[in-house]
Length: 146
Image (cartoon, rainbow, N blue to C red; front, side):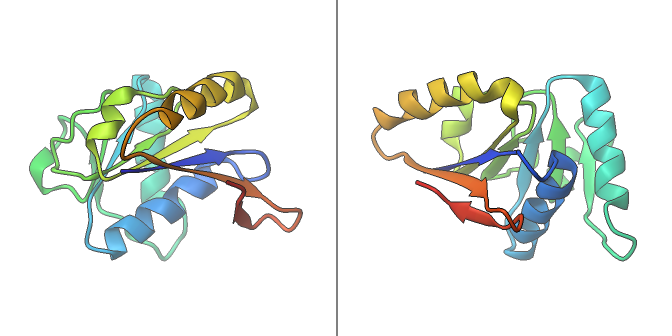
């Protein structure tokens, strides 16, 4: 199980998340995006339809379509109704249920850095969990820091 921590400093979630989602879908896998607040879910729904003019990223908000058919599903909790094996936690809150997936993407900003550090440390003691921390260089490119 791999957990990728993405510290959003230069690039906002609105740019980073669609890139990750596109890569997951292109690999043939499915993604569950978790945000607790319904208004945040609605904003993510709009984002994934419009993040670039020429993109198409099929997705839905949980409960609004046939969840089982969605390559990308936006939900309020870590329940993969679409059969996803990848999960993106996008509201800065770590959830241990993400450890049931093959890969987790934990996005956080400076407001959630203390909680991310706590999650990082707690995952160090877990067997079978590989942690990776990604940060951006001065050019804005993601680099693995640890």
